[in-house]
Image 1 (tube, rainbow, N blue to C red):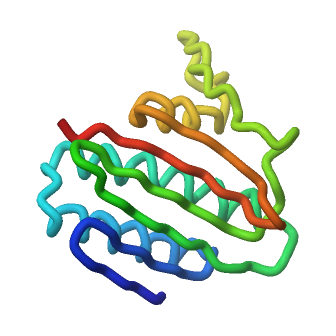
Image 2: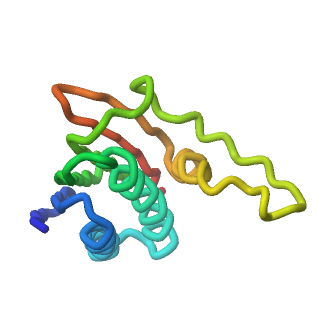
Length: 146
């Protein structure tokens, strides 16, 4: 894992594996707290980031050689912008999933295995965008800090 930091902005890169992804997510969460982000807000950001990065590990690099994930965090007045990029497979149709909440029934065994992640990400961010540029996936997430 490679990491750079300066006041107001920091970045890191790591391999798209479960173990390195977890280490990368923890490193971002730790840096957020060092930069003065409240515990609750840092926790919400960590959840959204974990969902996004785990999707990259599980889907963008599924069936192909694992590549790198790059995370860039930039503080702007009362918000935090995070850009996550990779060279994996693009999102289906080149668009973010809708992220509608799953219908919950009384029978828990009927709950879908996935589908909650994008809903969580959308709930925890103030803005989210996806682009595929020159073979790179770019997910941009904005978090309000005030």
